[in-house]
Length: 381
Ligand SMILES: Nc1ncnc2c1ncn2[C@@H]1O[C@H](COP(=O)(O)OP(=O)(O)OP(=O)(O)O)[C@@H](O)[C@H]1O
Ligand SMILES: [Mg+2]
Image (cartoon, rainbow, N blue to C red; front, side, top):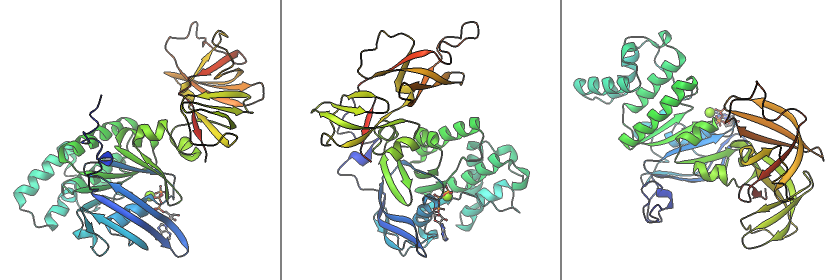
């Protein structure tokens, strides 16, 4: 059991902790368009905080306000307790890696990385040492004499990362830092980022629209939509306990059914749905009146698919026909159609090798779906 008074890994739970970055009622308007809409946010030292949301939801705008390249239309930004409203970008304890990484085309890799240190008037020996260390870390030592146009997109992205990190800022803002990397390099760099954060104690704010990346990297995630935060929480909270249909759909996929609460006990609720025609027994109470319209969300991997009727007892299970199958190697996805024509998605790990090339379940097979009482989440919005 974790010690509830030990907040080292989750400072946001500590009532005594002061946030390192505090965004208070910040909005940004461009003409009559609102890009960031009255947001509040507290980020703690050493966090790797992700802003996650679809294109145009205001992620870059918020980051640019933190860095000082954009002025809030209203509200305040504090860093380390200091009001940043009148502090120019170069005086903030922040470094930003831009979405378009903006390398100097005429400078080679090492000069690009050293640029900020030279401008700060740091001694030559120290610059060389820090640049060497940083290039080794991002595995670019052998490319140090190349110009940006002689590098691949992923290599350029690592130069930009090295250039941002070499200055050892207290806060590093990264706008889509890994977008140009292939899957393997991306995963390695994700772990590298987490190591850097561990070693240097830098506070990271990372913008991404890749939800898996956010889940892997982050201490906490803010899910953004149309300039507002829909939910802020740890990856587990966001995934297991989404507060709205939008968040449940944005992070992973979810089957979503409309229904009414027919029983509301202190430790359980029953939701009756029409499509599929099924009663959901959920083993946690909710603060919603009986009779109210709600949605039930169940993730595809939390549903068990079986050709046996043995578990079928009317509660948290339903019969259907296999409508579609997708074989993805380590798992298969099934789309099952119930008698009332509702489609339910199920993912199931492929534990055994298919016999004679046949999957356990086939198109048009009759199947039984079931799920645990803890698997469904009740949503009101
Ligand atoms: N200087 C500007 N003038 C007018 N509108 C702007 C300006 N900068 C951004 N916007 C608008 O504000 C909204 C948010 O833009 P922003 O760049 O913050 O989105 P984003 O979440 O970073 O998207 P993406 O994932 O595509 O990078 C967009 O609709 C954009 O068109
Ligand atoms: Mg952006």
